[in-house]
Length: 316
Image (tube, rainbow, N blue to C red):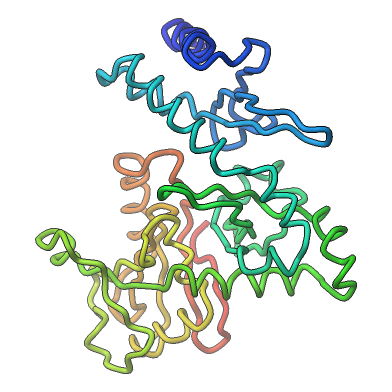
């Protein structure tokens, strides 16, 4: 570990202990890939203990260290952490999680996120999901939404033991179908036009699912930026019910998908003449120069086949 990074972690732990009063033994640093740190290095801060569980706030330390290196003071960072912990306490995560053991209470809070299947294979082992190549469509449950901060967790197969008490017929397909339908309802798909995004700060994307007008979508080689109304984790839009079928109808063509991050996907008509090998080269440059590691989804190029209604990987 970099000495400066190691010192920063120690200062964080001491600062949280001194500022908030959390015991030193209630804080543990986990490297990326270890338990509870699948997405990146985390400082695990135990907030509260219960008889059957404990509430822990996980802080992504690499992001905090990057902010520190760019000039953010330790005092400012500790202030942000204090705010996060206060919001976490206010959210009442433990009580809300207990309520979600009832499927009727939980099902409206289910939604789907995309993650790279291979990079997070260990953490996804018992998660309810469906795979498209190296993309995992993972079911999450929203625990709370406070001050634009959403707290959620992956739905594990063990949760079925609770849910089947009242719904013995329930299976993973039912749960996934509920989650993907909820995702559409919570975050409808949108097409974002480049010129509008650049020159119009109030631009919120274009709705296209209700339209049969082919002019709402570009058929040239530049392609279309597809996301959702909130953009965060918006690449899921192409997998939402009816979206791929309608895009193919508007394009009158199969289409390629270039996942520049977890937040958006570029849609290119096959009839535009673009070569998937060229798209892959552009994607590699984008992932290397623009996309943060935490937002990475895949290096592969996919195609939607309008005849078979299937998603296919078209690059190695």
